[in-house]
Length: 283
Image (tube, rainbow, N blue to C red):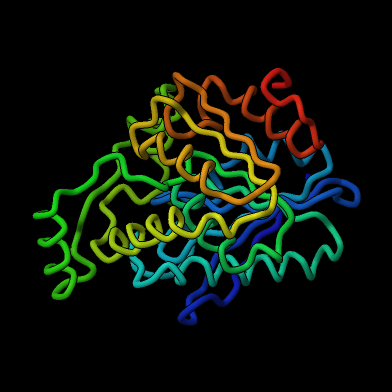
C-alpha cells in the first residue's frame, strides 16, 4: 500500500490538505472520503485497510477549517465552502484515474455535503455510500432559539454555537479516547455560521433529494446520539435512485466504522459495490 499527501488551493484561496492510499497494481475503482464535522480524513483507516488490498484507491481531504487544512476551525459562510472543494477533488481524481468508477463515501456532515453536491454534480461520480448522514439534527432548536441564533449570527457569525459529545461517536472507549487525544480533531464548538449553513443544507437535501438518481447505499446506527437516525430514512425515501438500499444497525452509535458492527458494515459495502442484490443476508 502506497500513501501520499499534499495540499491544493481550495475555495477562497485556502490551502486544503489531501491524502491518498494506492494499491500495488492498477486500481479497479476509486473511493473518495468526505469526512464529518470536527474530524479529518485520517480517521478512516478501517475503510482504507479493507478496500485498498482489494484493489481500490482511497482518497480523502480535510474540509476547510478542519484537520490540516486552512480556515477558521469549524466555521463556514456557505455550503459551497465544502462542496466546491469536493468538486475540485473529484475532478482532480478523475484526471489521475480516467475511466475508473468513482465512489463517494460521505460520513455525517460529509454525508450532508455529499447529498448537496450530488444535487448539482451527480454526473461526475458513479455511486455513493452515506454513513450516518446529517440530514436531521439530534436536537432541533425551538423557535426562540432560532430567532436568537439568527440575530447573533448577524453580529458575530463566528460566535461559538455547540460542540459534539465524543461519548456519542462509539461504544468503544478506546475509540473515544483516541478521538479526544487526536490533535487534528477540533474539540471546541462549531460556529453559529456553520450551524446555520448546515441547517440550510439539511433542508435542501430533504427538499431536492429526488434529483439524486445514481446508486446510493445508506448505513445508519439506530442508537446514534449525534444525528437523528430518522434522517437516513427520510433521505432514502426521498432520493430518486432506482438502485438504493438502507441498512440500520440497531445498537450502533454514530461512527459505524468504529463500532463492533464494523466488519458487517464493511462487508455490506463490499457486496454493494460488487453489485449484489441480496444485501440483507450478504454481510
